[in-house]
Image 1 (cartoon, rainbow, N blue to C red):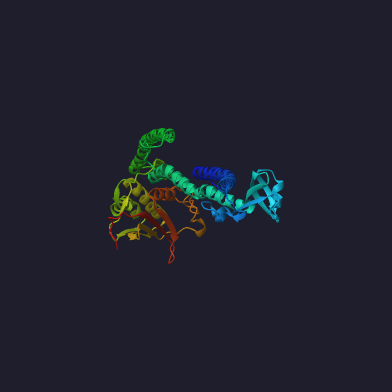
Image 2 (spheres, rainbow, N blue to C red):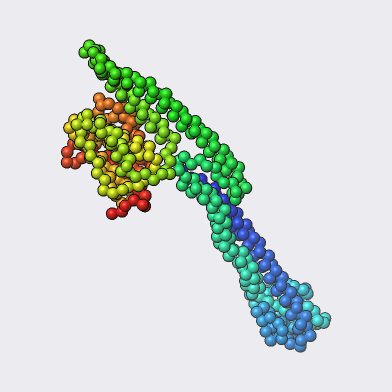
Length: 437
């Protein structure tokens, strides 16, 4: 279905109206000019008659008369009633004045006048000549109106484009805004017709900002209220390690500790997704290496418990525009997933480099990888593919993709070609002050 366009509808509506109106005006002007030209030819015949009324010629072509327009191709005939001239004899049967008559098969317009009882004269003009003169004058009158139509169309297109420029500029301004920028749009300089719309839009921005502020407050309160009891439960469970307990009881305590850890991890991921829904501000320049080192240091103990070699290689400083918490959340989820699914004694390599205009983060592990038919589905929330027995809720890669998209980046998954394992590549727009190869 073709999209409706107000500018296009106005353009075609106005152009159609102008074209139809101009054509009607041109036809009316053509008809009016033609009638005026014919009446002028009649006046010329009478004027010629008044000039040559006293001339002694018997039959002459009017071009021989001084002061008469030769383009009229008029003929003067003067003869007596008993004249031997037979060509114009039929003129005696016509009453004085303007008449149409046919002479030798040619139609003439004639002005006849009696000079004496036995003498009269006539000024003749061919009808075809009169029509040619009238048509030429009518075309010259109507042509400017029709010629102006293309010019009017161009002017209309320019005026509409200029008038709608404010809407285009407004759309570009909104497109260039970040997701969390809900500042009101300026009303100064806006057309009167747009001001009610802009006012309503600003009121909507204000309501959205209020809703986001409430959501952020709720997230902060929920994080505090939910983390506190989970942390307390985890500490109490760990305190039981030094207590002499029966084997079956200790086994149940270990299950409680594992469940508490999973619940804590799930809570952190759910809160991370909630923060994403509130939007990520791109107003700080972050050095990827520093953020990666911090995440690695926080996860190194988890990797050591599984005897996994976790290494970081950075070829150059890489600056991206983001929030520190968003970068750390993205990296933590990818590296945590790699540690979770990599078998004991495996290896995880993290490499930071620049690829064209991207800051590239590559995390390569020696885990089982992902079946090719599942690579396109693992970014969906709560999807863990065939590894359903592993810890986690299936939110890690979903958070990674959402965060990368909000940072104007992208995520790619690829199984290692040389051995089992997965390569997660994250690309974020690099800032100009980063080093260049």
